[in-house]
Structures are given as structure tokens and as C-alpha cells.
Amino acid sequence: MSSQGTGPDTDQDTRSAPQPARGGDVLREIVTGNAVISVLAVVVAMAVGGVLIAVADSGVRGSSTYFFARPGDTLVAAWRAVSGAYVAMFRGSVYDWQAATFAAQVKPLTESVVYAIPLILAGLGVAIAFRAGLFNIGAQGQIIVGAIVASYVGFAWDLPVVLHLLLAVLGGLLAGALYGAIPGILKGRTGAHEVIVTIMLNYIALYFISWILKQQAFNPGRTGQRSPAVEGSATYPLLVPDLLVPGNSFRLHAGLLVAILATVFTWWLLERSTLGFEIRAVGANQHAARTAGMSVARTLALTMAIAGGMAGLAATAQVLGTERSLTAGVAASIGFDAITVALLGRSRPLGTFLAGLLFGALKAGGFLMQSVTATPIDIVLVVQSVIVLLIAAPPLVRSIFRLPAPPARRRRRPRAARPAGGPSQEVTAP
Image 1 (cartoon, rainbow, N blue to C red):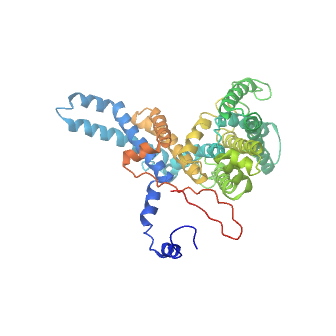
Image 2 (cartoon, rainbow, N blue to C red):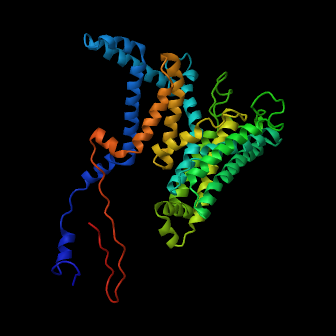
């Protein structure tokens, strides 16, 4: 006899009852999913950027003085300002149909990828930390330390071509990993907050690079805060060499392949490996993970080390691929932009990769937008900031587009102990 219901046929009737169509539930989950929220956040941010572009345009401001007499003039001027700015951004980031040659037409796309490579790699490091419940603010410092080691191996050592590049990349990766492991160890052993520790380590790295660029080893000629150029044997090879397109100025390098491999590795690590399961378990509930026999301190340290290693790879994309020397501003704002990339990508490898491409395109297109339309490039920063705001507040995005709330997940209570001679029962919470 069943433990629930009023008769033996109750369970059978329940199982045989027709189930409602799940098409609506599937569509609801798609519409309210994280990916759709991220896309809509970008759309809203671009709309906000359009409003600011229109306000900053002199033609729009001039026509707005007689708006109530001829409102059409203001609307036309605003449309021209916004469309002109975004068309220029597209030309500077994807495809410039006004260029004279095909190589010049597709060069903007390659520049977007060049800017995206370090963002993807550093973003993956931040995303891995997020999955463990850690907020890695230290990608900036990890990039700086990785760049110091990678550049030194690149210009100070004399090695064969392939070996030199591998050791330079490995040096940057290990330096970033060791620097990232510091806050992980302190978090696991002493409970020190990783946000405070990583911020302090950022300052240490910033002052350290300023000091080291004044030393004889990194600045022999005392010509400024720039190290000697990295040897050609230690640089990432160009993916579009001059032999393929004579006279081209493409900067796209093999760091893109490293970013793709790092994305695949991150997916495998988080979704298919034992360590990835522990990372996700610790991120979900440290107490439950500790009760299950996992070493939380070890997992936190390894997570931050891997995150720092990704930031070190981002540094190699700078010093071995784009800049090809060490400067005080080698990290630029990559470490902080990586946080936005990881948030937009929802801490998923593929999402982070696509978000990095988007932010690389925004950066590459912003330069042409500024030069052609005189639109302040700070608009790009505003767009990025609005994206972060909306990603952090999904209900706001849903209210703007009148989307339904996500379906509530049914929580299952712990499985009851199996009584002797009877089956275990699992009760579903309402």
C-alpha cells in the first residue's frame, strides 16, 4: 500500500494522467535565461550610449533650441549623430567598406580580435574564481607580474625559436599563477578576504613594475620606462604574415590560438574534471563541500593559482604579441575590464570568450568613432558600465522588456533514511 494517497490506485492514476505540454516552459526558460538577459543588457547599454551620443552632438544641441517649433529637426539630427557614430564604430571594429583594399577592409576585425585576446584570457581567470565563490580583483597585478617574467625571458635569454617562445609563455603563466595563489592561500588558511588582498597586491605589482623598469637589467640605456624589445624567437608568430598579404600591417598573432585553447581547457576543467567539481561545490557551499570530505583551503588556493595563470597568459599576449616589450602601462585596464567580461559571460567559458570579443570590438571601434564623428571615446566606457549595472540587476532588464520571471526551481528535501524492508521516499517541496 502506498504511503501517500488514499488507495493503491492513486500512484497509478497520477502516473497515467496526461502531462501538460512543456513547450511553454522551455520557451519561458529560454526567454528568461542568462544568455538572453546578457544580450538584452547589451542592447539597453547601446541605447543609453545612443542617448549620450545625441546629447553630446553640437547639431542636436543647436536644433533642440527650437524643438517645439520644429521637433523634426532635432530628431533627424539625433538620428544622424547616433547612426553615424555606430556606423563608424562598426567600420572600425568589423568591416570598413570604404577602405581601398580588401586587406584594409577586414583589418578592423583583426584589430578587434587583437584587443580581445588578453580580455578573454584574463576574463577566464576571473570567471574561474567566480565559480569558486571568489571575487578576483587581482587580475591587474597578476598580469603585471606575468608580463615582467615573460618579457625578461623574451629579451634576456638566447634560445631556439620554439623553445624560447614556450619558456616565455610558461614563465608568464607560472608568475601569474604564483601571484594569484597568494590570496587563495591566505583565504583558505586564515580567512583573509580575497578582495582586500588582491587590491593590495595590485598596488604592490604597480609599484614593483615602476621600480623594476628603472633597473639596469630592464632598462640598460635609461631611455625611459620601456624594456628592450623581446627577441623575435620569443614572440607570437603572426597569423597573417607578409608573405600571405604583402605590405599588410595585421597585428593578429598566435595568441588567439592560446585564447581558444584556454577556453576549451576552462570548459573541461569546470565541467569534466574532479577539480572542477570541487571548485563548483566550494562555490555553492563551502560547509557542504567540507562535510563531503573536500579540502576547501586546497581548492581555494588552486582556484586562485589557475586564475592567476590565465592572467599571466593574458600578459604574454601583450608583451609577446602586441607590445613586444615591457612598459609601465602594459596591463592598461585589462584586469578590471576582465571582471566585466566575466560578468557578461556569466562565468561560462564560451560566454566569456564571446564577451571578450564584444569588448575588443567596442575598443577597436571606439577609436574610429572618435576620429570620424568627434564622439568622445568615453561613451564606450559608459556602455561598458551600463552593461555591468544591468548584468548585476536581471530584474531591471526583465521589467524594461516586460519579460516573465524565471520559473521557480523545485527544491528537493534530503532523501530520507530507508526503513528496514521498505523503499526510500523522496519528498518534493512545494
